[in-house]
Amino acid sequence: MRSLKELMSLAGRVAVITGGAGHLGRAMAESLGELGATVVLVDIAGGAAAKVASEVRASHGVEALPLEVDLADEPAVRGVPPTVLGRLGRLDILINNAALVGTSALAGWAVPFAEQSSATWRAALEVNLTAAFVLAQAAAPALSASGHGAVINVGSTYGVVGPQMTLYAGTPLGNPAAYAASKGGLLQLTRWMATVLAPAVRVNAITPGGIWRQQPDSFVRRYEALTPLGRMASEEDFKGAVAYLASDLSRYVTGHNLVVDGGWTAW
Image (cartoon, rainbow, N blue to C red; front, side, top):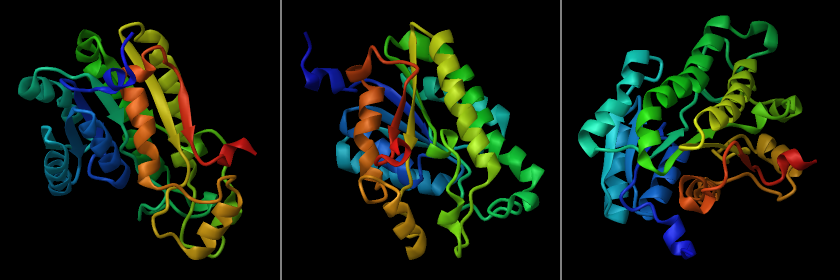
């Protein structure tokens, strides 16, 4: 029987993280790099991804590569696995983390339902859901050949429950239908792929609760009052979740949605 230290080791494995230059992507890269993985940071912001890659290399002594990719560009998305295989020779872990989120300054996004734009709806589904499907499809052969293939899709509590719209009163924040629909779809895609890609590839999801990002005080107070643990999340709160689902600690876990929300959905 292997030790916990052996089960959690990712030495020799390669992880691709979309949205790798973002707050959560960086925390995931740090977590997997700390466990010995080579990390590939896929992001539309190539310079920011390069900065995070440099920080991961310096902190953990592992290889970290940035890839500038627009997830709305299907040929570019399909090109990610061949690029990773060409440069690193393998692909073991895929984390679909990138998303258009509720704070995005998009026309027809953080507005009342009657004003939400179908064009923005399509853009959100393209990045939040379609890109995850395309990338997983393109990566599946390499993940199957890995011997440790794992996909982690990053959902949202609003893919599980309806929004508490009173949270947003008096703030510029909103909760678009497209975000909820895309994240709900991603969670169902997780279950679908878990059965179809088994037994060679495990597919799971992490569903974050609200992460503190200097939101208006009124929003934060309301959110904390509705959360059993009494606070919003920090990026550090997700390091253990991604380490668990990416490693052999969870080698008999697939089709699971690990909700990390401080109890928000437990009421």
